[in-house]
Image 1 (tube, rainbow, N blue to C red):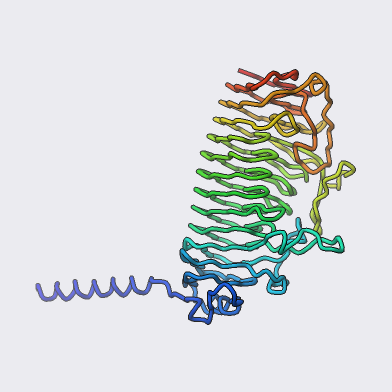
Image 2 (cartoon, one colour):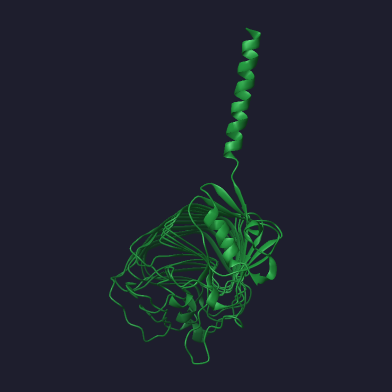
Length: 457
């Protein structure tokens, strides 16, 4: 009896060991496929060979070294593990970037990218290493000598992918947008560093029509929008959670709505530091007919910033039926889609120090358009120090409607209030909102224009 039990125990142990061995992912080291990693040799073919050979559940392992690559096409059920001490370096030659991938309808000059995936699932990029686009203006200029727009590759573009994870990896120096995800579902970015401000349009995370997204514990330093949900189709960008992140930008820390055809729903941002940010910190916008609703923002620190909160319902009405460059001028007209809706926004527990002088970007601005109101907005437990310095002339200024213009706060000019300007809105609540100035200001703290059911306590 005891011998039988002993044999059964040994057999069970061997079976468990075999099961554990079967679960160990197969490793595909890129140097085994001929990659040099010397920072000079073009290693695209070798690294792509490792990706192509990778069986489902396998790991493409990038050993320490510097690997110059053009476009790499990832596939389902794989991990790209860029080890600490390893760098994937984007080629500085446009000839090394693929042209057969889906482009960006909102930015056709950014059609190329370094890492690409389409209709794939279960992709994981990790390892503690660096993916560097080497996208400086000198290498990838915004405009060419003939005046035409230059091609500027993105770092990453994934289209129609599911279960995408980025963990403990650094993305840096994209020539344009850094991480562009289009119609992707179940996305996680945890402990990711983005350092990208060497060119123009250096966004961090661009989420176009994505759902079920978690961005947690990330450090993001960008030249343009750090985290930017977009919507170029009727597909909603929804169920987005951002927490415990640090973001700084020359343009915005969090911005919805540079494109807003379908819209945005169920977004939560909490426990973040959005300091050292210019041109506005949190921007919630819909101008192309989409919805923007159920937004919760709480426990945010903002030091040395401009424009802490900008909420805008406009009427650009872009349909995005073809690749389209952004238009910034005042002469624009509505393009056809009817105005959307903005409602159910709560912003709470904010501490901010607004930098600079009067300029054009300092106050809170909440503005719909005539007959289309922003609804149900709550600002609670807000503490903001403004620079002050506004004049009587500033106080008398009328703010243009600019219904169809690109949604950027500073386009509206100096506001007639130093604290908050609210227009074309209803059911707006300020609760325990403490706004102060550091020097005298001739403007009012709060200006309301065409606002119904405003309450303050």
